[in-house]
Image 1: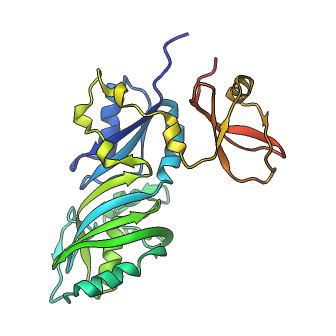
Image 2 (image 1 turned 180 degrees about the vertical axis):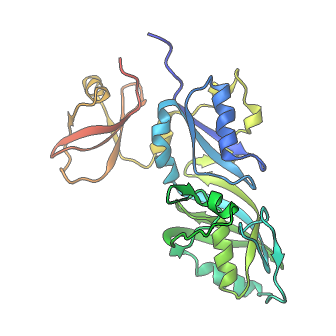
Length: 296
């Protein structure tokens, strides 16, 4: 049997000017072409936490994407651009209103909770099989429907017109560019995002993140985080040795759960490794939907 393939997560501090895909390509080259993918795109303008999943841990990307996120965003009021940030052509509005700090704080408060948000035209969302940004760059109309997103908190960190800085805690699928846009529109003006840093995804913090250029073929494995960290929020099932064998081969195990239990469970083997994601497969039974350990 050959050497096991690396499986795990890297907490990368993505620099401004680098795409999320370029970070993944960099990691794949270091890892000897091990399959990799990122959880939650950061635009080239943005920096901060980008979780890269490797090997079988790519099966856990959606669990990382579900985690709450924290950002520090900078915006310029009284301006607009087709991309909703300074990467596009920025146009200053003619004689826009200058909101007070009190008005800005009140507007931010109205964006907390479940809100309907229209994603930006320049986004990676797909429209009839095409990326929205591809259509937008070609001048094609992009009709993205509003969708529900959850914003835990928006704090006005500083405001000196036209610059506004916000600290934002939000759920999956939230576009920070669009939060700035909607806040400004509610005040009778518009805004473009001028900077963004993601400081947190779940338990993955900016303080613990490593710059991609600091990784090399000799040290990258030392930064690899066990796959179990991707499913911290799931209830845990500790497997016996016999159960681990059954799960690894895709078979059911007996556990006291209801047949309609919609929860997912993190199955952990005797070595403390994430073996699989389990779901109810009938009354008193759990079965794997994703296996994380190599068969053997």
